[in-house]
Image (cartoon, rainbow, N blue to C red; front, side, top):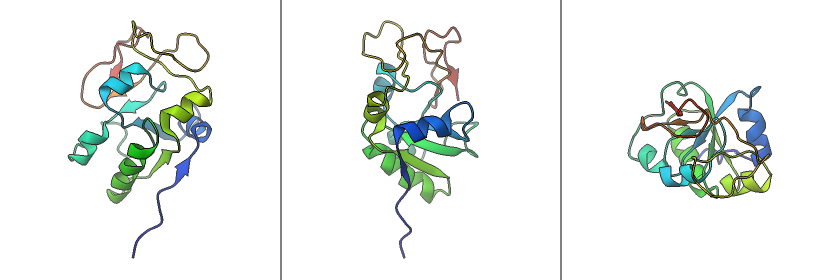
Amino acid sequence: MFGSPPERITADQARIRTGADGDAVLLDVREPEEWAAGHAPGAVLAPLSGLTAGAPLPQGIQDRALVVICRTGNRSRQAVELLVGRGIDAVDVTGGMGAWAEAGLPMVARPGDDSAVAGDGGAVADGGAVADGGAVADGSGDGGRTA
């Protein structure tokens, strides 16, 4: 009667699946304030609060496999259950952005944010997108992309 639980992957596996040679998009379901404090390069923001209210996925990712991430893995698991219910190919990251940072994977934050940023310590061109149409000021020179 019930399907199997959604697949969960590690932060390292997520980076591989969503990197330059990967086949998936990293979907961050945290709230905008959390996103601003630090997010993975190239991630797309679509808060769980919007998805549960019926918001569609951002343009350009509807037909892509999704790797869903949040702060600890709780909201991403909820989002994956919702997305899989909509017929979308989605998996979530065990441990969320905490595990991402712990693995030393790159993160970017808005300019002027003094939050700790994991990864190589250098400037990373973000390329991230925001689902609500707002721009992300990320210091990459492009002002962020909107999905």
